[in-house]
Length: 98
Image (cartoon, rainbow, N blue to C red; front, side, top):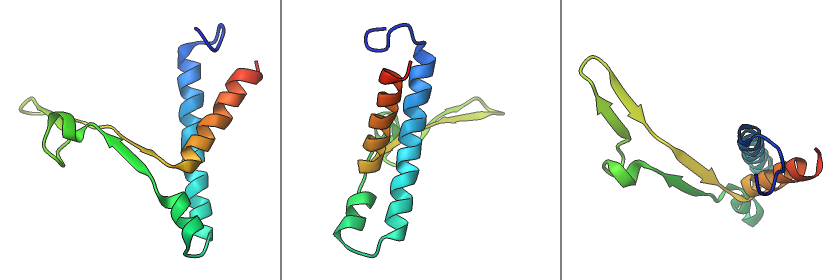
């Protein structure tokens, strides 16, 4: 791979996923402990990306009705400052701790 040497792509995706997950939890925890104000809004403000507007209606997940079984697919990503910070820390671990 281009940036990660001989690391497996699954390991890279897993580490980046957990970095973003832990970063988001950390940001929510910080926002929970802070009093109302600009700093709390900074940690709570996020941007969401989802697939629901691409294929289905505005609020409908992608669904496949097979009669007896209905499969529903959805993906929503929420990014805030702490998520980006968690991704940066996980990238640091991938890059420098081999």
